[in-house]
Length: 87
Image 1 (cartoon, one colour):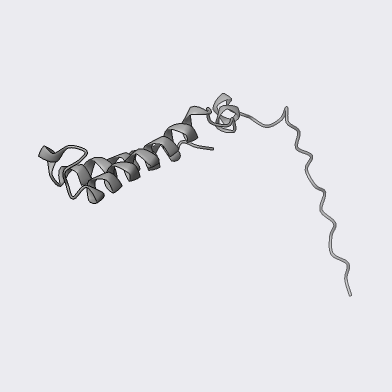
Image 2 (cartoon, rainbow, N blue to C red):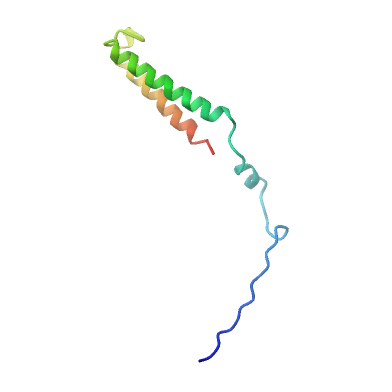
């Protein structure tokens, strides 16, 4: 049976590759305020909705009626947006 040809591997070095400056920045961890803000927004949104339902619509702002639901869910959506920045 014929022997297959042995291929030489190319040696790559860190100095030979082109690295952009943004590559190093993308690997840095996110600041500490990101998860703290996200958890705070989630807790605020859930608290707002629970208070609205348990009070029968009288609290947190009775004049807003069902717009209170929009406030609570908006806070939780904002938390998801903040969490998309977390690494």
